[in-house]
Image 1 (tube, one colour):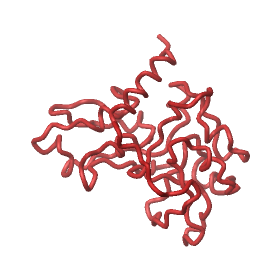
Image 2 (image 1 turned 30 degrees about the vertical axis):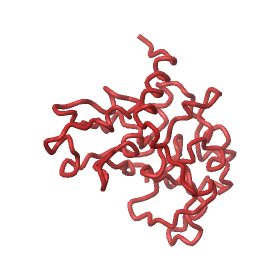
Image 3 (image 1 turned 180 degrees about the vertical axis):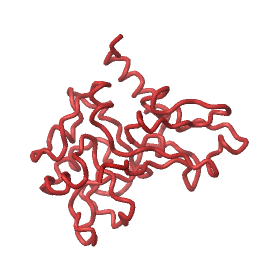
Image 4 (image 1 turned 90 degrees about the horizontal axis):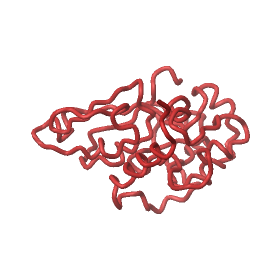
Length: 208
């Protein structure tokens, strides 16, 4: 049976509610530069081409950065030695991808405005999101996660827009990530109450 669009959005709204008032309201401008190192490879916006193709196709116009309603995108510093300066990246602890759930329209905003094709259009429909959004993969550090260490937390599970698929519930609310289903939106990482955080989105293998 087809997954109804309104059900998908209901689940997204529930994920947003799990974040409570913790949405990022920093002083970073939309065009502010991070200055953070990219040793593990940059996380790219939803709908991005594989890294090599993305870097060659992106024209550094920053339209995606400007249009992001959650300010989840920021450009890599032009002084970064990687040569990827001016291309968009994401740092989930600062701000995650909300999949434009609170915005009007039928597609994710960043993918609508990309003029070069570096970001492929992603419709706000579950199947299209699951097919085209591959920002990264969430990984749980069980040494840090409260639910794996005699506490019951579950903050990341409640934040996952694909609960039951990308993230499943174990004993004591232990998060179990299915890497094949995870889209890497980062809502789990943003919601994690542990510091240092016990769940991180890492660049997906094979996207380089």
